[in-house]
Image (cartoon, rainbow, N blue to C red):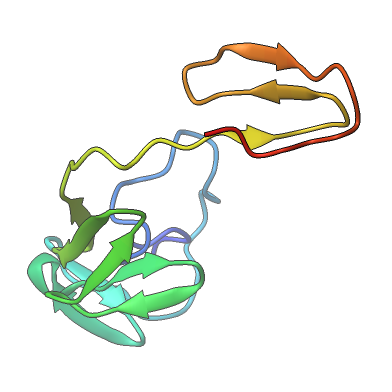
Length: 113
């Protein structure tokens, strides 16, 4: 078999030079079918991966304010705009979500509003 068989996690052939040229022992699926957990599965049945976890086809997860559904080994996510937020990084400097920078004049921080 190839040293880089097609799997659900890696369905496309790797770039030239990334696989060894010689044959290796093991199992390989027929063309158009992908190896996953020791079995050959159709692309539509391939799971999706997120943060070292495997999710079956049709499973949905939340990613920020969007929903992502596993389809054929790929996440398909809605494209809702999330609420904007800003953060304070560093001692006396603020960068807002629209990339405006502000400097605080004193160490006394109060909520304005």
